[in-house]
Amino acid sequence: MAPTIVRTISRYLLRQHVAPLGFALAALTSLMLIQQIAKQLSSLLGKGLPTSVIIEVFLLSVPFIVAVTLPMAVLVAVLHVFTRLAGDNEITALQAGGVSVGRVIAPALTGAAGIALLSFLWNDQLLPRTNHQLRTLQMDIQRKKPSLALKEQVINEVVAGQFFLRAARIDGSSNKLKDVTIYDLADAERRRIITADSGRMAYSAGGRDLYLTLQDGDIEEVSRADPTQFNRTFFSTNRMRVAGVANTFQPTTTDTYKSDREMSTCEMQEAVESARRDVESAAGDARLVIDNDLRRLAGLAPLPPRGLAAAGGDPKLPGPYCRALRRLAAWLLPAEAGAQTPRPARRTRSRFRRSTRSPSPASCSRWWARRSRCASSAAASGWCSA
Image (cartoon, rainbow, N blue to C red; front, top):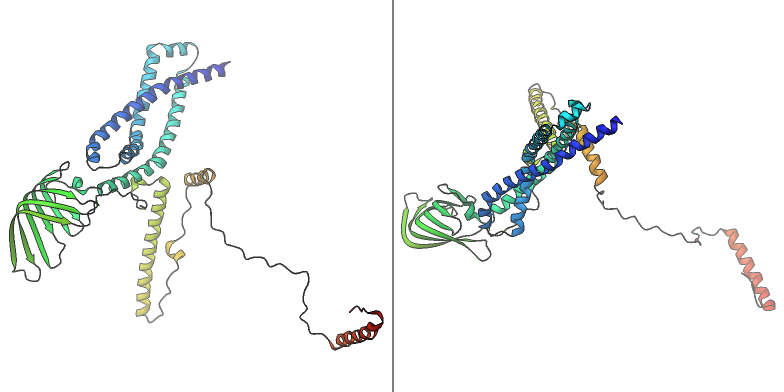
């Protein structure tokens, strides 16, 4: 009877934690998600992105938010449950019934251990993947409309190594600029510095080119061939076209680079092991170069280069956690289909074989005698079997 009562009490205590934990997790996650939406929504809407991309940005932010709010939700749930149990004198009733304090805490500790394991797997497997996808998506969004990525009072690189822009004020919604300075390095023979009181940005129909309309400024040109030559041109309106500025959303399909926040434990172990092999290989190559220099001074033949296996050393086997994950993935995921090598068509053997041997003289004589007897009796019988 006692084990049944203990199991009932354990289930009761665990059920009491479910509702506060779910409510606290949902409330805290929603508050932090609303904060992210309020911070990023204006910049995302101004870029003219599809609705699905904006929703994807916030959905990929949820795993990071849950990783932060789950420990807080557990704390809130435990404090709420045990405060209520103490306020309703349920803990006193359990102790009066012979249930110790350790037995009351044991279900909470068991649930905390399960949540800790779930949180570890969440942070190690799901969170790095979503961080990688979110970073890649944010980089694609920044390339969508560079005007909103420009910063005020900073020299911004619009075209890599060719076109730089600085503005005192930038209005991302209307694409208006104030106190503009442009450094045009596209022409290798001359350098241009363009200043204007104000300006406006617009894009071509295809979104590949940027058009600048500058007001009340001047253009200063210096020839690299003749630095003494200096030209300055004043203008009231100057229209410029900057080619090669993308204004279309193009998602990245292949991005192999991952930072430490985008790698799981096994991937970081593989990166450390690869770096260790590179260090050992570099140290071995350095020792080989020194030994060959000394042997060359001594008049000896140089040593042959080492093989790849000797240069990198023996790779370490993955830990039990990584091996368990690989086995679980091999069991859950379908096996990769491999290309099969076509087999050559099997040649069928004929039931009748032609003899390639040349007939012997004895067989020829027997065959000729039989043909002679057949010819002599053909007149009498009219038929002869050869």
